Length: 489
Image 1 (cartoon, rainbow, N blue to C red):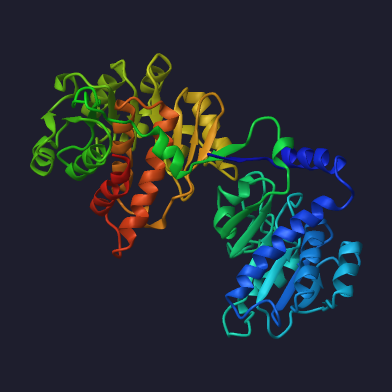
Image 2: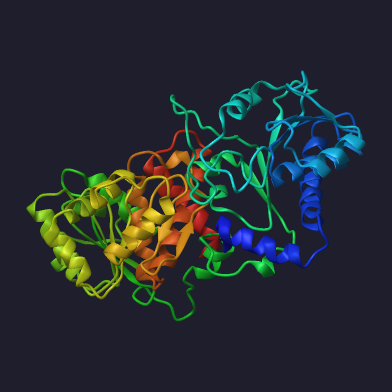
């Protein structure tokens, strides 16, 4: 699990570390790591010697990092040009060092550029790029290198213009981001929220974290955590010689209907790809479920399903009186529940929402943005992490806020972000698969936040795997989910 830190925490850590080091040491460490990554990128485009490098430099320390990195590249034979976005306010010592190494000042991008180093603004920037810098950045995709390919853009610590603590990205009047779109971001000392969450995360490209000695000085509570494969592997429920289907957990699935049998089939498919030993289905799609999944024990109603260790409820259930009765039966069971899709719509009814606060067993809800808005009366907004945590506290539930970078928030204020999201999952029925997998993990004994984190991670991997074969459908995701989960079994 990787920790992600807010700007205030990073600033405090930098101040503590700098007080213990000779002046300028921290910037030189950052510049060395930045120059090393740039040299590796240039090696794929003909090498550092003779490479054309453009530095976009603002008035802050990120500009200084870029200048000192440019100095190192210039001493290796690169042709380095500096375009200040705040003329007369660039880091004086860094600029002098670069010029001594052969770098030159320019007032427009050169005709040939292999690599652009974005040092316009850093973690202290707010409100998107100013007009002059924004106009300059808008032209970066047109720059071409010696090989005729598009110039590689490397961001210093964070892409300039993003909201660092939230991952939001200001846009212009036609929806274009007023921020740099980087191919690679070289982050110093700690990951920041904009690198992993919200619309800013895709703008960061590939993120490389450079150790500058900040770790021991980072104190307090991280803003959020990023899931890694090792977490999924360590948390996945294990089977042994004494395992049998009931000990592995039994998950109940109350989804679908005669009108929407596919939702039932898909959510059951997701559950069967998980670690539990048995799936019980309750609902109007029982015939179709048994036809496609003959191992499932099926009945018409939750009340007749038998004993389970967790329930999944909502996908394709409908919102009529019968659906409400089934949801009430699920909420009455003293086991963890996953509430998805139609179950969330039914919760807008105050009488059902009140039942959540009376439950002792855990609840996990899985809204996308429109469902979030129905529950809360407003969109998640610029800060998706804060939005998920607000809803989690209000509902006393673990919230899995779906999106490209799905956020998991817990009632006690912990937050996780999933790095495996894929646009391939933006198609009907994939959320049903996710809900089924999540219920299976809960029934197998995982704590709600771990179940949500693992489910989101594997669901994202399944989306990527399914996309290898072309356009993705939800049944493809079920098949891919079995593939990506196979190493865990």
